[in-house]
Length: 99
Length: 521
Image (cartoon, rainbow over all chains, first blue to last red; front, side, top):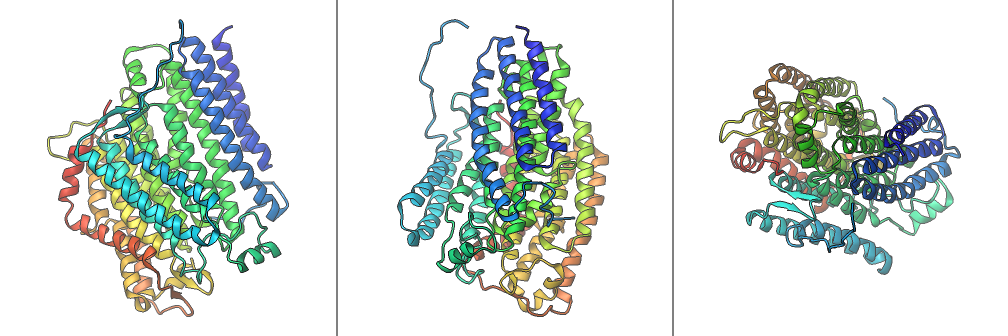
C-alpha cells in the first residue's frame, strides 16, 4: 500500500466535502459534507501514521470519531428544531439576520 | 513498532485541579438535572456555578503562587505563564458572564432562556410551557463545559488535544445560541449558521492537523517545531497545513475573511450567551493561535507573519467600517469585536522580537489587551440585557437615546465600557491598545501599528457617536431599564471598575504579565 496515494484520496474527499458545503442548499446535505471532510482527515491521519510508523495518528482518528459523533447529536438537534419551526431544511430559508 | 507495553498513564491531579473542578461542576449540573425536582434546580445550579468558579479560582491561585509549571497529563497539557493567565481570565470573565444567565428580573421572573426548546415557536405547547413556568436550567452546565474547553484550548500541548478542546468549547455554545426566549426564530437561525460554519471551520482545522502530522510525524507542538528546524523536505505539506490550521483558528477569533458569522450569531444568541462567547472564545482562541504559531510554527514565521499582517489590517478595516453603519446595538458590538480581533492580531504578528528586560513582550501585550476587552465586554453585554421596550430587549440604537438621563448609573457604566473599547486614555483599553501597537512596532511592523492607530480612531468615532446620543439626545419614549438583581449588577460593576482601575493603575498587572508570559516548550 502506498500511503501517498491514500493521502491523495483523502485530499480528494476533503475537497469534495468542502465544495459540497459551499454549493448545496440543504442543511442536512451540508452537514453530511462536513462529516465527509472529518472522515477524510481521519484517512489522512491514519495513512500518515502508517507512513511514519507511529501510532499517534491512529489514536487521533479514534478521538475524531468520538468528536464527530458528538457533533452529530448537537447538529441534528439544531437542524430538527429549525425544521420544526420552518418546515424546511434549506439554508436559504432562514434569512432574518442580515447585514 | 514492536510489542505494545501498556503502562498506566500519569495524571497530575493537584496541578490540573482548577480544570478538574470546572469539569466536576459541569457534571454535577447534569446530575442535578436528572435527580432534583424542577423547583429547586435553578437555585442549585447557580450555587454549583458560584462554588465551582470560586473553588477553581482558589486552587488556581494556590498553584500559581507555588509555581507549579510544567507539562502534564502525559504531555497533553502545558501549564506555563500564559496558560495560568488565560485560566485566571477565563474563570473571572466566564464566571461573571455566566452569572448574568441567572438574572430573572429582566423577564418578569422568567430567565432569558426558552421555556422548552423542543416546542415550535408560537405553538400551543410553547404557551403551555411558558404558563407552567418551565425553563432550561441546563444552560449553566453547558456553559461550564464550554468554559472547560476554553481552558484546555489555551493550555493544550498537542494538536489533537487542541482539536478536542475546540469542539468541547464550541458544541455547548451552538446549543446555547439556540435557546433565546424571545425572537426564537432568530435564535435558531443563529445557531444553525454558527453550527454549520463552525463545524466547517473545524474540519479545516482537523485536515490541517493531518497535513502537519504528515510533515513532522508528531502531533506535539514541540515535535512539530523541531522537525521544522531539522527537516528540509515536504514543505508543501507543512505550508498547506499551516494555512488550514490558520483557517480554523482565525474563524474562532472572528478575523476577516472568516467574520461573516460573528454579527449574525452575536445578534441572534441570547444576550448573556453573546457576552460569554464574546470574551471566552476570543481569549481562548487568541491564546491558542499564539501558542500554535509561536511554539510549533515559530521556525516558519517568515511565511506566516506577512499573511497575518494583511489579515490583521483587513479585520481592523472591516470591523471598524461596518460597525459605523449599524443601527442595532448587538450587531454594533459584534463588528466592534471583529475590529478588536484585528487589533490583537497586530501583536501576534509583531511577536518573536527581542524584548528588553522588564518590558512587556508580545504575549503580555495580547493578554493585557484581552483582559481589558474582557472587562468592557462583560459590562457592555450585561447592560444590553437590561434596556427594554415592552417585553423584550430593545436593540435599536435610536431607542438608547437619552438613556443617560433616565439611568445615569447604567449609562455611566456603559460609557466606561465604550470608552475602554475605544481606547480613550485612563481606561484599560488605552493601555491594551498601546501595548499591542508598541509590540507590533518593536517587532518590525511599524506600518502595521500606524494603520492600527488609524483604524482605532475610526472605531473611537463610532463609540463616541453612541455616547453622545445616550447622554445628549432627547430621551426616546417608552424605553426603560430593568432594575437588575445582583446577578447582573456584579458583572456590570466589576467590568466598569476593572476597565477604570487597570487604566489608571496598569503597573501591577503589566508587571505580572511581563514576568509570566513565556511559553513553556
